[in-house]
Amino acid sequence: MSEEKGIKNICCLGAGYVGGPTCSIIALKCPEIKVTVVDLSKERIAQWNSDKLPIYEPGLDEVVGQCRGKNLFFSNDVEGAILEADLIFISVNTPTKTLGNGKGRAADLKYVEGAARMIADIAQSDKIVVEKSTVPVRAAESIAKILSANRKPGVSYQILSNPEFLAEGTAVSDLLNADRVLIGGDETPEGQLAIEKLCSIYEHWIPRKKILTTNTWSSELSKLAANAMLAQRISSINSLSAVCEATGADVSEVARAVGFDSRIGSKFLQASIGFGGSCFQKDILNLVYICECLNLPEVASYWQQVIDMNEYQKSRFTAKIVQSLFNTVSGKRICILGFAFKKNTGDTRESPAIHIAKTLLDEGASLKIYDPKVESERIYEDLTHPLICEEPEKVRKLVSVYTDAYSAAEGTHALVLCTEWDEFITLDYNKIYVDMMKPAYIFDGRKILDHQTLIDIGFHVQTIGRKLQRPKSNRCWSSNPSMN
Ligand code: UDX
Ligand code: UDX
Image (cartoon, rainbow, N blue to C red; front, side):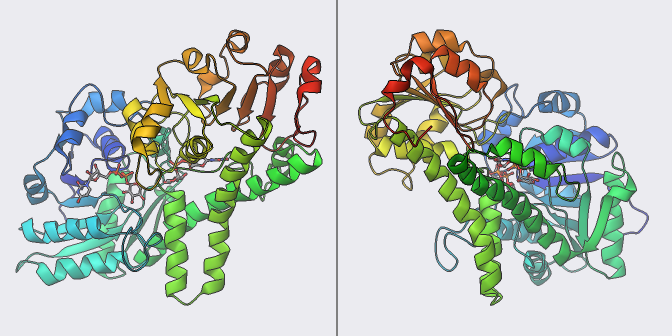
């Protein structure tokens, strides 16, 4: 790689939740660089090239609209894009292994490995290969081995780790105003030069002091550590939500009081039905597996607890629903409000709503589901996935998906709010109450509703981390005095 040559062409392998938004922002901020995002899926690329992007992300349509066809391209021509690139992001997915050693915990690097082999096979000139996918520590080493074992004479590679910290639903602003950019590379002069070249891309909009450079392994581990520590905060507050429900403390008040300590801070202390999303569980399982492999069983079991607490929270919430509805939901209609793993995304990967819906179906309920951004086919696919259910036809019969909250709520015995979409806060709950079976229940898994108003309307309300009053006129109906 010649020293003076800056990056003129970027290729990104993988047009997913990470590759798509990241490269769109790079294209927006670096108009002199040509950015090509490639993917094996023809359908995904066609969607990126259409008016309806494959992922819903606030602000992304505008960014893509501004750059696509100018310096931002979405293509299935993987070979062409690799050939002309100076720098290649590997942004393919790294799911948890479903087979063999480390099954259910270790990250499956087959797509990353496949990407490295493809680069080695195609490249005719020097490349900087940047690992953007979250990978186990020392995965860069595997990529380097594959590339060097298969490289053509005269072609050299530098491998960098540049993990992505964007969160779904806020990807555009996270990318534009990143807390930090992390770049890990070799300590050799060539490695440092490659780091500088990648820095110069981010420096188009990120202040240099926020660009941290480390060795490769620190960078890889930092990504796992950041996700593990964020998830740990959620499990910690969720564990305390159970204590609140048993004592009369209010978890929101506790979180506020704790978060005011500047050493702790207020973010990621929102008690919930449990964390979801493609990263937290996968990355912690991966960390646990790495610790076991490193013969660090105490560290492994420490992080495993974060996952266990998350499972407990999901089960605890569902058990509470069943218990409140007179210990049986068999034959009852339940409305699920929100199916995405958080608001402002249509993504349902590891969404707690899946766990809740599955348990209620197992208990014999029929479900009426509404989410503003999740397509109905996605919901059916999630609930009929072989790991979730054995009788897909039955699920399809018991689940109906609606395009508005009012029709989904009509005629149901209970509303279960799983995702904190803003529109759920301002629904007309008087109207909803009239059309529901009585007594009407609301289970607010996100603590976003005005509970006193709902109680005044006549609802029985349950939420996370707080004891609530029953509606006065209905007090004699309650089945279980310990529940409220
Ligand atoms: C990302 C990261 O890359 C992952 O490591 C992180 O932990 C979670 O987020 P994400 O962008 O969310 O993954 O994954 P996904 O939306 O599934 O996108 C990956 C894309 O890569 C898909 O469009 C898939 O078709 C594509 N792909 C996968 C390829 O083009 N080639 C492959 O060999 C494998
Ligand atoms: C996360 C990391 O935040 C991001 O830095 C990384 O790059 C990818 O993984 P993401 O999974 O997209 O991002 O969303 P995030 O906002 O972290 O939420 C994850 C889950 O935690 C959601 O289910 C959310 O509802 C839940 N959550 C979050 C809580 O339950 N309470 C909180 O206080 C915060």
